[in-house]
Image 1 (cartoon, rainbow, N blue to C red):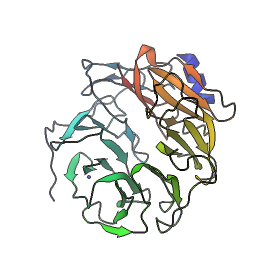
Image 2: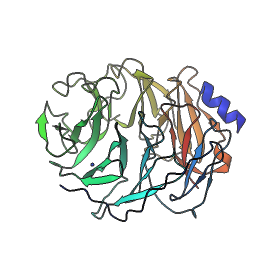
Image 3: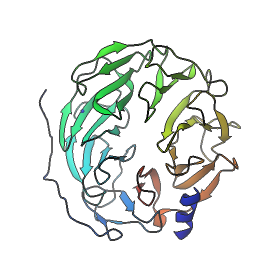
Image 4: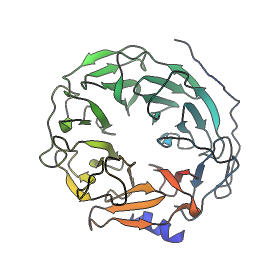
Length: 341
């Protein structure tokens, strides 16, 4: 486990709360955490050298991982299957805050904003989270992306799923208006610049990746790679180096699947293939927020991609946990969240 630590060093009406339980906020001594209230989640406070125990029986469940509130890093938000949970002590104790009762077809995604505000969404719905209270939102259409202005958590933008028409809300998702030009296709993914909310990258099936720097009024493709049918299914800015963007495409035989840009998405270079995965799979991709040259793909263990050497490598992690998701805290390089069994 010490080897892994070294590797990382180099490497949303009225409020509704379904199935709510009283929040538990217990002071903890870092390094001695036992996770309660949420199965399959483990936390490390020492860069991956050791991981917490989990007091819950393992469960079959799907998630897109933990959202960390950067201005309040002890507060976390996660959606697992149809349930929304939060934690106020860095992930040791969890409270179920809401259950989605409408049918959904893909895993819910969590987005943390500021001052206890967050959003959970998938194509068919979105809810707003406010310090434990959850409010369903009315969307103008099915969506393929949602982003929050880092400077104003009332300012939200969404991308229509089918044509990439963007909508904007200035009241936390209570109302929406169209903005800009359509991206022109089915939206697979989007990423919002953490320092410039008008700078957005979007993956569009049959068009590839498109970039706007003027709040969706104009769209341009990158100069190379990720064009046409080679569109991204995963996109992520590096919070400490916002010009750096990591991207992943669905896996294809004898073709790179991991890409990186160092100029905000104007140009991408191939970093490497994702071997050992069948064709047509979109794997989760998590950048290292403290080393923009490195990103990992959880595949039971970790597949690490290095933008300098372009040599992917496997590394052991997490005390034998079979990892399906991993989140590195954007504010503390020693804090890592792993979801698995």
